[in-house]
Image 1: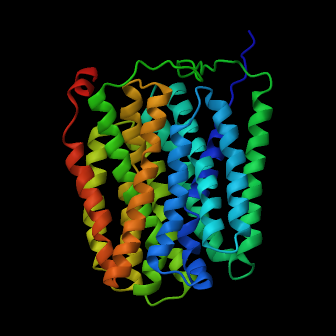
Image 2: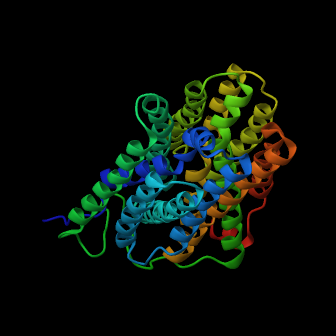
Length: 386
């Protein structure tokens, strides 16, 4: 019996999320370079992050019912946006390019996670953790490549090559779609059809609950990853390359944590893992604020990466268990871009006005505390569904 080909394949899903991880973490390692070349204050640097994640929000909420088409659109938008950013002469064009690139990232992340969440119904949390391992790996490579390549090459050709990789992804997806089944089933995982509205839909309380979680988490993770290189450069008394390696440590531990999470989530409920993750993240964020040496900053970067690793796969697994429509799941994922846009920008504003990036860490600490408080209250209709 002939088994019809599925699109996207697991390999392409991993490629897509790895590429999205590269794009999501792109600004953090190169932000000190841009700030020096364009003479930016922290509040202006925060605008670059805001532009990218506002685009990501728009990309997430505008995902189509045909999720595979959204994946192609995301790849093409990423290529155009980051290509424009590479050639930008200043802040205005850079923000516009990052907005378009962010739009592409939103399309890629949302469509890929929904496709995976629908296809892999058994051990969904574990499978999502494994896929998002590739996202974290891409983010880790962003910091690593910046530390390796910036001393050897100019920033512009590096960014141009990055934009070109999105074209490869679009071509790969178009090839896989040739001859693929219009509705995709994973026979091994007893999956539901992909690319159509198979979800039952979320109740209002559940909808708002998950949206709130993702807004705060998007802000928390981006505050830490976006500002860590700058933070380590100022308070660790080290060079730019060493500071970039500090951000690498954050993403490396997050990547390893995602791999470990896929095993933990096979044996432990998503809600337990979620709460433990948030409690530790709040403690380690406070510790980072009081770190005064390169070694202590690196130490807390590792702990933060490990503590944050299980949150997204556990939370998205809980969301998909409620069987949202593709539209609802897309919006819930997309609103994380609002938090990722607003909180890092506010960190820059606070840092500029107080003269201390350490003081500005009160924002991610508050986000972690808010998430922990929310995790203890489960909406009534979600509890009944479980």
